[in-house]
Image (cartoon, rainbow, N blue to C red; front, side, top):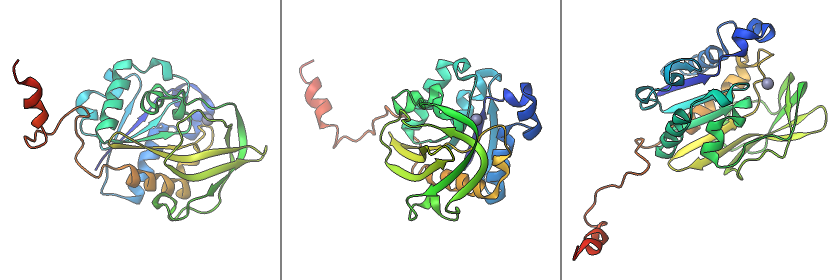
Length: 248
Ligand code: ZN
């Protein structure tokens, strides 16, 4: 299975406190966590500033699951790349939106809403509660998963009603967030994981790495990825085609 971890890769190169936590980029810490749990994965990296934003047709065309971490530079991602990602999800690729990646152009294009949160606050204590203990993504994840310092995201979060609600995070200010939610979009699966604030070393944690590995397994395609507009040629099903072209 081919995994691509996409990262905006801006704060690690421009903001000292994030650079100190992730000197090799957030994407590297995420990828290493996935490989620690499943060495059979192929993990590649892509970031903003590369040609095609790192997601040329041949890269995306080989990707089974794409993880997306973005924050300050959503607007710089090219519309062509966004359309390419959406098309690939519709065809069956898994897409995992990480932390502020929920507000990306990719998220909005795939889910069809603004995907904006209502407010946020840094350095909040997060309690990640499992609300669907039978769900495959919850297996092996502590309940609650405790993050002493993360970031609060406030509801309402403008997303479609999810098909899968696995985690709800509560914060020390009393707010709650649907922090681990999934959707089936076309042939693909999409999942949002809110926890992953860039100023704290969260993606090195074994418990969050377990959670992300479970999400990757859930989002992985269960059938060959197809062109979303492709029609399977089948004369028995395509009787209407002959009928509608008769007499032309
Ligand atoms: Zn953050």
